[in-house]
Image (cartoon, rainbow, N blue to C red; front, side, top):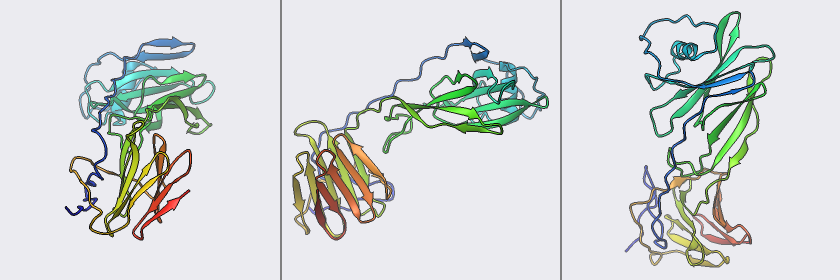
Length: 304
């Protein structure tokens, strides 16, 4: 049968059928946060509060407390999911400079990822001032590191579902520079999961690739061009199998796989393979040897 078009508006069709079914790995839910006192920094897990009436203006006290946190979240409309109990953690300390009074608050979300933003307030001329409103797939709790704040978040990789990140976790330090909070460099905390399969397509939607590395006998990269019709496969030893052009370049193109766009200048690594999305085409190699191919509308070129 003739090969069908690789991509539609929503997805690309499955490439040459050479692999087994994909197993789905679920992400365990985050554990509970424990209340703790660390020196002058107080971190609290918040109990269910009374409900504030919509439209009522609050006059927050100067105390760094759960009650104040709830009032400030309401005043600044940080309860984006309109939860009855949006405040999950209150962390108090001199985060806005020596001698300052500041409060970090994590805010809940009724989704598969329970905390998606956090905020910091400081006392300025007797009033609480919002100085940071940070969206994040946060892995609680926020932690005081001296007078700084450490956040830990999940790492998403190309093709990850919304609530199943596979890139492990990373953390960074937020420091007050005298006028605002500045984030430090990310540091990997938990290693990324091993990626064994990915489906990608080029921004032109003319080239699609399936990458698999599951050990001997089931590791390869297959890429195909729709116009003109040709395809190539790459094995771990660098050998290529090429169908150069024409109606004999056929395959079984299923309907159940959704390909992901790999933007120009980006790359993706699956096991021992790596593919680069270039304006010149899709370039895929075996990482150790550098052997591979470049595929585009013109044809297929060996590399390495």
